[in-house]
Every structure is written in structure tokens, then in C-alpha cells.
Image (tube, rainbow, N blue to C red; front, top):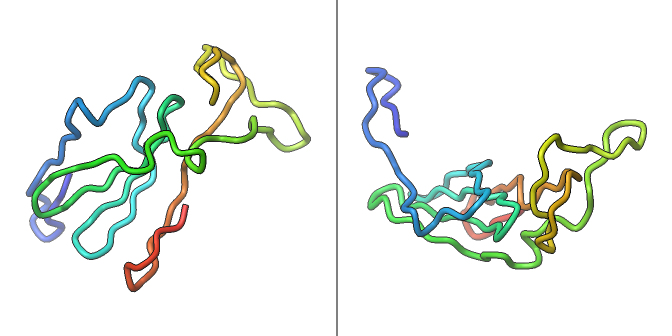
Length: 118
């Protein structure tokens, strides 16, 4: 949602098309640069980056299910305690687990817009 902060009015709403959404999708972090928004979809199955053209509203998935998007390790809390979820979700290999995994999450765009880090 784009909001005009001077008037507090919604100026535009961007809606991801169904073709971009995967089971367990959740759009998480977002960065902006040169008319584009870069969004992580940390879905437990088929994680990816989503690129949004802020002018046209067009979106596309990139690096869909690429190894660099997929969590390599289970998550642990302070003290080495394995984080477990109440309800099972697919792990990076598609097997159901209660272990917590987080796929592609944080990202940043270089100030000149030449590099995207995740």
C-alpha cells in the first residue's frame, strides 16, 4: 500500500497475483531503489525474491527455489534450544516438521542500485 504522508490517504494498493503466491508464502522484508521494490517471499516451499515495479504494479518472482533462497539449518534460540513450532510445516526438502526454518529473509540494495544483497 502506498500512502501519501502529507494527506494520510492511500494512493495505490499493490496486489500480488495468484500466480506469484505459493503455499506457505509470506512476503517479509522489502527494500526500495529506483522505482522497484524487492521483497522476500520466505515461503517454506519455493522461496524467492519478488520484484515489484512501483510504476506499473507488475511483479515477478526471481531465484524461485534457488539454493541460495533455501534455509540450510534449523533455528536455535539462546542457550542452544531448538526452536519448535506448534503446527508442522514443510522443511527445505518438503518433509513435514515442527522444526523452525527461515528461508530468504533480510535483504538490502546498494545505494547505487547495482547490487542486491540477501
